[in-house]
Length: 146
Picture 1 (cartoon, helix red, strand yellow):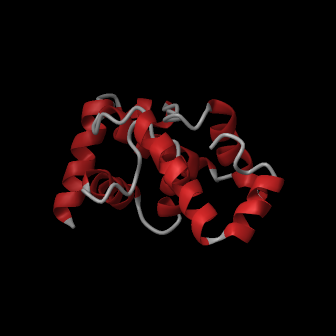
Picture 2: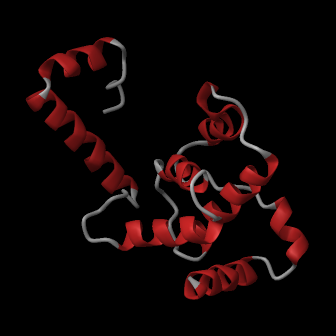
């Protein structure tokens, strides 16, 4: 527990030597797109806005992922970080994401190539194993970009 907190404090100190800058951080979209990130933060996809402190926490975690871990592209990550932050403090969310990224089972696509492979694999398995569900997803437009 102390090690996780120490690593998080170190990451914050490297990114924001001036403590006042931590409250003004802007969340990177990591490939999700600024419009979708804004919708996540401001509307939580229709469930209401995330609190002010939650927005800062999300921005800090996503900035640490980008600046400390070097992840530039991972569209699912803002949503995953938001879910994690509803259940744990920033330092644990960051540690969890770091472990998910470093895991060899590829929990998260960390490049555009990985992301497209991930999406195409999903479509392939849904089409093969759940043809009725695949038809519904196609009809509603969920598979247009796949």
